[in-house]
Image (cartoon, rainbow, N blue to C red):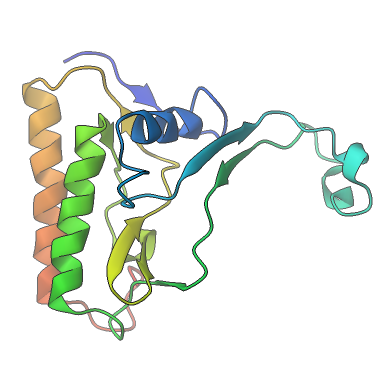
Length: 162
């Protein structure tokens, strides 16, 4: 198996790498993930005083990714769920895989329902990017789709996954 980039920190080399893949391969344009505008790397919060004063005593300067905003978005849960959203979620995870990204946190808490009709995948902080689709990558892609498909059986409203 080829070495993968484990994206656990915010910045160009990490979460930004996942979003860069998603942007370059069209997943953002097709609406399966938020649009990726870029990242902020080590911002001097004193420039934005008093708005960012809570960062002034941090050991490291803040970093962030800049994403599109959905005005009519809500977290997917057992109340707003319906079967067509499952199909949209599976299409979305396949689109993410096509961008050479494994999400690695495939739960309803990481999906937004936008305008009540489509699913947008979020939270790529533990995602992994990969160059080529070999046997291991294919197997993990299938695993993520199956995991999402298994959730059609539903979860009780008080679980940690919603």
